[in-house]
Length: 276
Image (cartoon, rainbow, N blue to C red; front, side):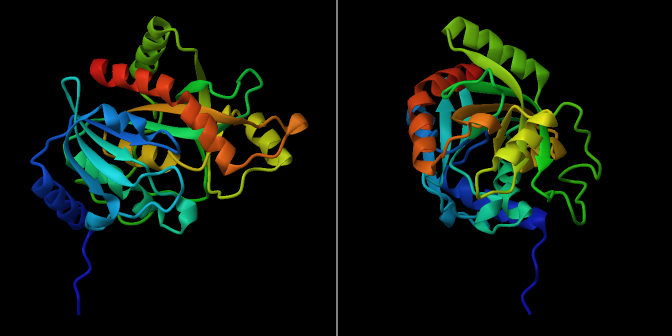
């Protein structure tokens, strides 16, 4: 009978494979969301590895996600960048969805930047706005920390009083002001998907304090905090979700808006990496 590997053993196998491609110790991890993959072209690459070739890594099957781990430098910082991600709605478990974050941490990254495309529920937001995430609400109905806890990966009951590092939010604001980029601040709501929400659901999410909503990032953040990583979160508003003026939205339109906003986000993330 084949021995079942522990989570720590799976992480170790993935890290060993990655280090054969490039002997690399990361300082910062980055996850790029739908249509936001251009940052990787600005890196001084050491290696580019498809997710499917890394042991135990889940494969991305969603349009707008390249599905590659890119190792290299941005400025003087050593960066492990995920060009794309997988999602809970693709049928993966929360542990599988967040496995790459565990690997980024094991590669040495103590800081993490998460990005995604999101629906804007705050009536002050417009398409193409970038939102610095200050807090989050997990409405996925699941949690990546359910099950036995490995103390080498993190404590059983991680504190979530500061899921997104306040110093990084302040730094993002300062950079945005200097670069003349409008930056909002808001609370992120994570849902399971894959359908977009109904008008009644948007009304509820706004009522409980949400500013943006998406189908990613929340579980990744929980696992990062579990591993004592400091996290910055940036969401691009790709569709407006006002319940009393709700218009049909499509994934194609979401990707289009993300692509249009990408240069500003890349500029912001590039500076954030250099200064965090």
